[in-house]
Length: 113
Image 1 (cartoon, rainbow, N blue to C red):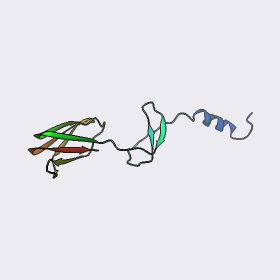
Image 2: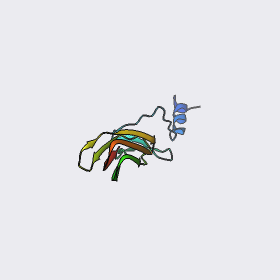
Image 3: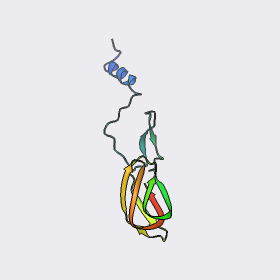
C-alpha cells in the first residue's frame, strides 16, 4: 500500500530518470544548448560552437577538391589571393568533402562553416 496518493507514479518516474529519448532533433546555432556525447549522455553546454574549416589553395586551379571533415554540408565562402570574393559552383561530394568549380584558375582560401 502506498504511503500517499501518487507514490507509485513517483517511484516509476524516478526509475526512468536516467533514460532520455530525443525525437525530431533539429540543429541550432544557439550558444546555450543541450548536447549529446558519443555515448548518448545528454548534458548542457554553453560552449557550443559551429565547426569550421579553412582551405588554403596554393596552386592555381579552376577546380578545388576539399576534404574538410566537418561531418556536414557546410556553407562556403571563397576569397582569391587578391582579397576579392569569388563565386563558383559548390558540389557536396559527401558530409566530409566538397568540390568547388570556377570559370578560371586562381589561388586563395575557402572558408567553410
